[in-house]
Every structure is written in structure tokens, then in C-alpha cells.
Amino acid sequence: GCAGGDAGPGAGGDDDIVVGFAQVGAESGWRTANTKSIQGAFEEAGIELKFSDAQQKQENQIKAIRSYIQQQVDVIAFSPVVESGWDTVLKEAKDAGIPVVLTDRAVDSKDDSLYVSFLGSDFIEEGKKAGEWVVQEFADADSVKIVQLEGTTGAAPANDRAEGFADVIGADPKFEIVASQTGDFTRSGGKQVMEALLKSNPDVDLVYAHNDDMGLGAIEAIEAAGLVPGQDIKIVTVDAVKDGMQALADGKINFIVECSPLLGEQLVDIVRKVVAGEEVEKRIVTEETTFTQEQAVEALPDRQY
Ligand code: GYE
Image 1 (cartoon, helix red, strand yellow):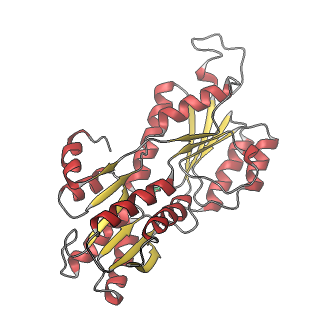
Image 2 (image 1 turned 135 degrees about the vertical axis):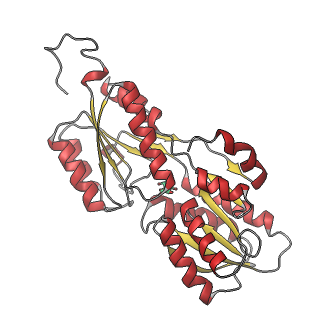
Image 3 (image 1 turned 45 degrees about the vertical axis):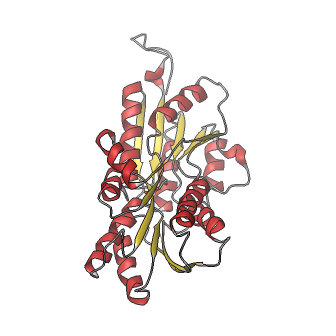
């Protein structure tokens, strides 16, 4: 924003900063919690936030970023819906002298001068944690048929959660991914894909869903087929949002790898530093844990989202 003139309280401080945030959409419980965290943190900080929802379309996100460039905001932050295809618009921001912070999801740009920092989870690690649980859980089984419900095609968390999981289970040929399809990180997507996959793979042992919402959709499909989720078919998911944790506590999901959506306060910190001309870390990794059914029962009452 513009400095000078106004000598009111906070002049020259946070009141003058304007941030443009281009969100992915509202596809999941995780995303809703993430949006709430970001909007809440900026409101708390007294920093103006321009917010847009791209409805999971890259073209909408690019439009939003271009409009933030035009409005000459101080910092642009966004969670890239897919990994590739960002170089041109990021170069436009750079040429306009507007620093960009990536939150939650990465881009595959070779030139890392196109953004100042990337705040978010290590999705490969999350996939590995899911795989490690599967290896333990099925230690005594001779063969394990797995259905994978993938996140949005081309999104960093879909690519990386598949990769980390495959790395771990790939060490033992008894694990077989019999089908893998995208459910676009939505509950309805997970349900639809699971309905179809159950017809061709009625003997599946395990569902690995890249997020809770798709796992919750799969539960509906499994129950509709007359099977018991969590028993006849085991389920492991990623996120640990409230509905997922409830299903875990109820025994319908067997294990959840946490992915924290609460990035708002850290993003505010980064924005303040960038505007003040201070150094920020290029990569800030979110800390997260995993939950068993027992741990979900314990954690649920205090869960914020
Ligand atoms: O896991 C999923 C959401 O990018 C980490 O996006 C995020 C993912 C999250 O739709 O639920």
C-alpha cells in the first residue's frame, strides 16, 4: 500500500500492508480450515487481505494473481492448484517487484528466485508414513490388494503422496495397487470412484485415500455395497480434519497421517518479514503427526477443525 500522509495509529505499520491470496478452492474440510486460518490470522494482524477462490482451476488462479499484480499489492501468496505451468505469471510478479509466497503446495519451476518462500507440509513424508503403517498393519498377510484414491491430478500433494507411499510398499511385492484413480480431493469424488472400483475389485483389502474427504466418500460407497469400512476393507487417509478424526474414532478409518492446514500465523510472519526487507527461509516445513483410532478418541475433543 502507499506510505506517508496518514499519521493515524499504526501508520507505516501493518495497516499499510496489502496481501493478495489466491486460494485453490473449497474442495475439502482441510481447505475450509486453511482458508479460515489464513483469513483469521490476517484479520488478527490488522493486515488487509484480498482473497480469491479459484474453484480448483489454474486459469482462475492465474487471473487472480494477475489482478493482484495490477493492484500492486505488497505480497502475493497462493496455494498452486497444480505443480506445473507457473513460470510466466511468477515472472510477471517478479518483474513488478512483488514478492510471492507459496503456501501449502509447491510449484515445479526450476528457477527458485520466482518465489521468496514455500510454507507447507512434506507430502512425500506423509505418503511414506501411510505406507509404513500399511506395512506394519499387514505384516502377517500374504497378499494385499490396494485401491488408491488420488488427489487432484497434477497437484503436489497427489504426486508426492503417491510417490512416498509407493516407495515404502514397493519394497515388498505382496503389496499390489490394483487400481488408482483421482477423486479430486472431494467427498463426492471419493464416493463415485470407490463405487466403480468396488465393482471391478470386490476383494480389495485396503483403501489409501490422499485425503480424509475422499476416504469419507469411500466409506459411503463401501457401506452401500454391504461391507464394513475399517474391517472388511481397511482405510488409511491423510489430513486429520474433524470428520476424518470422527470416522477414525468410530473405527471406520484405521489410520490418519496428519497434514496441518493452520498456516495463517506463519504466513503473516513471513509477510511481515518480507515487507520489512528481512531474510526469510526458502522452505518452511509444517510439523505434523499421525493418529491411530485410540489417539483419535483422545484428540477429538480438542480438535479445532
Ligand atoms: O490434503 C486436501 C486438500 O494441499 C495439503 O488439499 C492440501 C490438500 C489436502 O484438498 O484435503
